[in-house]
Image (cartoon, rainbow, N blue to C red; front, side, top):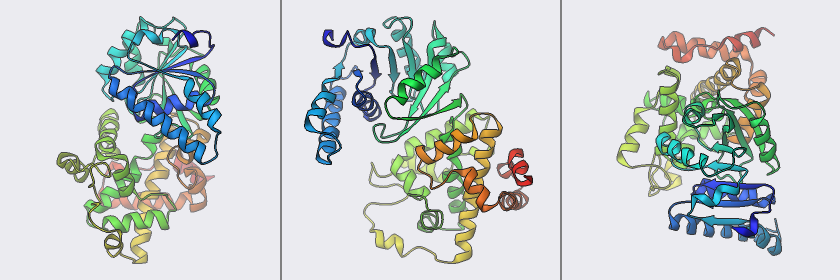
Length: 389
């Protein structure tokens, strides 16, 4: 590692999987030297191949020259020795979503890196505060949540723990913004911004399906054609992987003390139990052995049904956005950025809700609460205030 010791800014990445490799490539492409650590040599080899392959694609698409590709790759160094991260000024962890494994790692990292090194986790749903609590110097710890694939998706959620010292989040944010990322600040709350706000897109669609009000192809058709979303909720869950999506939903639900708005779906749980995890296993809500035309033939084109599906899911999304700002988890501006840049929604939810009509959204939710008598459909006070403006 001697050839990079004189570099002012060195980023360490722990975990050579898809996410870690994507973050490493992002930092290297911005000009920083990067050290990728993994205890498994085959993981490092796969990371090497993935980064080279992506750079080759960039060259083929004329995004960079072959000379630039070589320069970027020279900035990435692979190691299976944790001590090689000692020169890093920022270390980002991107390993398995198990809090004990992460905690053990950070305790080891504290003994390796300098006192001023910022330590960050890329967790999508675990408590930043809880992870920080196991450190001798928790003030330098925070969350930097990148979205997959990290070298393509522009958003990063910057999440401060209760213990994070003043200035650490801003310093990390400025650093990541030099990597051409769009950063939003989030309070350490279950799901942060995106994974909290996005829950109704899945959960209300699942609710409609489980009540046999509409089938899967119809719901996806409505949300992509009427709603303008790039993928329907069931297509997206299959793409993400049900093991991942279900776990995030379950974590958010438990962390919010079993609030009914975040309750997981039995239908999705059964897919996980069966090993039908979506695209990566060939079967999820959709089966890769069944043709797209077969699913298209199952779409119900009744207009009133389409209106019901869109209204229920959309109203829940806007209400969740209002709740997120009401709880001061983030600013309204950062929320709009988060949903458009993090999950590619066609519009910001406040902007969209205003055009749709806040009063109309409230009426939809009040009607649902009257029908089901569930707290799930309670209207956020901020939403009622916005309807009065």
